[in-house]
Image 1 (cartoon, rainbow, N blue to C red):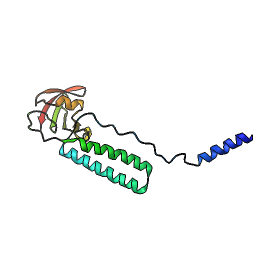
Image 2 (image 1 turned 180 degrees about the vertical axis):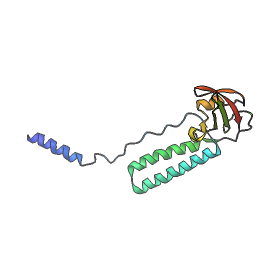
Image 3 (image 1 turned 120 degrees about the horizontal axis):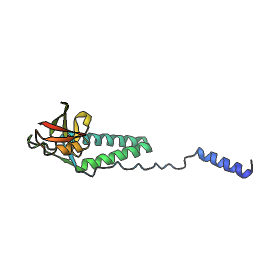
Image 4 (image 1 turned 120 degrees about the vertical axis):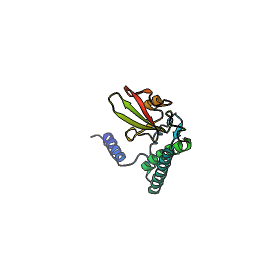
Length: 164
């Protein structure tokens, strides 16, 4: 091995054992929905709980001087601060004559299967738990409808059989 090659080899080996930078790469911001942040009372509570968790995780990361955790928890903290600041608490539905934000709607499909969902804000939505975001296609097809109306629910039609 020539001397120049040996020096290059030693230089690259020494760099392998030294941090090139203590800087932590910034994480991209979590995307925030362009839709109004309508929330139910429960949805607002969920946002406030997530914000409190994010604040605690950020404080713990600061105390531990953990740069990676600080970046991740800072990202979450910023997201939940934005969601809390933009939250618009919606009053309970004014009636059960038609579907509104906050309504619980039961549909019956052609095969006799019944499904119920509550129309809620984006952060509270969990279709498997019976809540749909008000901006989802199914929720939009239900909005303003009445018992007996036929709506598009996924790939098929369904009849609204109850509104609570």
